[in-house]
Length: 173
Ligand code: DLZ
Image (cartoon, rainbow, N blue to C red; front, top):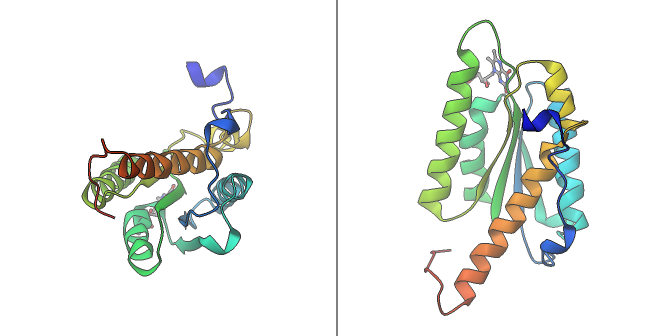
């Protein structure tokens, strides 16, 4: 499997333009907080590394990953944000419960993104074990929080580029 071979969080920082005027929302799930807080640290650090001002990063916590889409919607409605990053960790259990949560989050965030024209980023770990989660929250496969931050910035810059270009496809703000 590809992920057993590499750190998935490697990227070229020069690919991300200055982000000092960007506002970001972050929603963090309390479930598996050892993991989600590590994701948050990686995410926050990456945003500030690219110039996002600390006062322009708006963070809220939700009880579990199932609440990520509704928390994201509430945050986007109450703060001026260019993108919302959702961080959670659902570990596979003895029943299909995890599948329902993961599917609901994926569908919820896709719907929010498409309907609003604003990026809602899927920073949800869906591991089989706690060890796999640790590997992806600052361990040997990097930190999914870093990837989520990079994805958010890339999507915000993509939207800005399209809006400012004559060939822009006309997103509403
Ligand atoms: C109930 C539950 C379970 C069993 N497992 C997880 C998990 O591994 N990760 C997670 O983020 N949340 C879990 N939850 C909580 C649900 O996401 C949700 O908060 C509750 O079902 C209430 O809606």
